[in-house]
Image 1 (cartoon, rainbow, N blue to C red):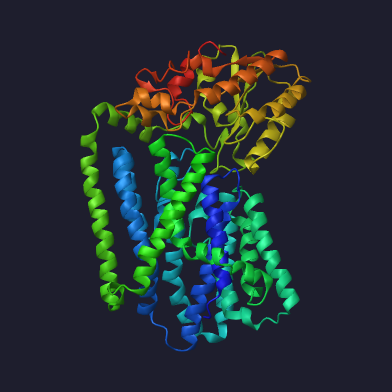
Image 2: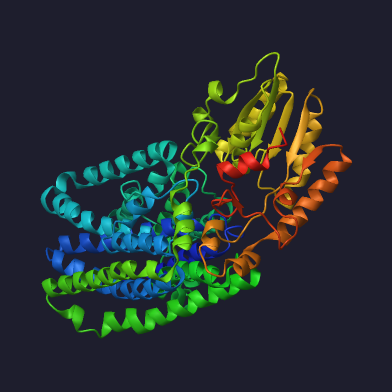
Length: 612
């Protein structure tokens, strides 16, 4: 295929959107679509190359895979080798053991399925894995493994039905993508066969797109619109119900650019500017490095990324990506004699290198426990084995795996009884963790009902993912107006900008004959509390990672505003922390919280002893 400089510009757009999204998702909420752009580009290039060689009757499986390894493997193995050193230094024994398994999955190019098994609402292991981003590389490799075989069969043996066969695979993959997005969002996101349609969309352009008649004006307008749609998607799209039907937007926009952009057009010239080409050139190495940099930067400085940190992380990622491109990618692509060997020797080199790295890392897993005391290991094991079943996920607590109101069980969650004092708990996960405490401390004449969903602010703003908008509308427009509930407890992971909407919500609740109580925010840490306690210097580490000032400012403002409205407000923060230096961290020798802020079952019961 003829080299297209504008594709490097598209790669630049894709990698920058992903990197910025991972560093600062608030500023670019739809930046994750960069991966979708990469998928379409890969389909365009790989399927186009394979089709061209099949057409010329000179396609070689060995040559194809050797070229893939030469292009991708050196930078990858260098990145994961250095990442493994940092993992050994910064991780706890259990964390390093999990890292070792993620490394094996990544080296086998099945990390997308591995990380799917670790996905869920409380997926700190998933988000803390420095190899999480390799899921997309695994999807690509699985595509590379399957598509050459299919194209040989379709275009080499069944030419008459080749287009039909390609269309069928596209259709099946797309239907599965939509179906699984509605039924198992995590699987739809990580699985390869739910993404193949995106690769094929690009491949169809490479194989059939040249036959489409194009005028200069039409090409200029459509290709420009395609890029504008991609830019708008980076800002406007959210992970809610993604990939699904929403994945069509970045996919088709990329297809339009690939179809209509050509040399001489204004857009082509813009995408071919030297800075864009440079970023496109280093895009693979930049993608490899940015996520480990984010993870270990936060672990080293024990902080969430602030504005300055975000700039530093971006620059570090960019520097490492550039160094990796020139010192590894380019060196192996142009000068290495190792990957110029016959195919069998190349495969043996790749397998031997990957096996050696995995073996060394697994050997180190046996050394890790010697660096920690039994008590430290016990704290980490508590974090690993803790189950939050008392939140009642999938029943009264909707999560990303229970994404709509159909999962909400009215019979089990809404149990108001005549003649009793009925309590209704409404909110997000920072409300759900109070259910067990309310239920355990309730009086004989009380009932406790629960309407909660992850990431959903309990206000009439009705913003967020579908589970949020559906369940909160249900709570405030159907459940509460029945006036079956004598007390309503509203709790959430409050932020300062939630207060105006909370006040508007409380005005609506004044219409009903009910007592309203607001639970304030709980103390949070920049790392899971058990992880902090698993370090020898945990006293100092607690102070460094405790977000007291931030939480205290929210608590003070909420208390002030709600007291003026004569709303009962309970300061959870001051129930846990007497001062910044004096916070409860253990309940019966177990951590008060199992992650950054959610309380354990024992803590929920203890903290709500006098608040039912």
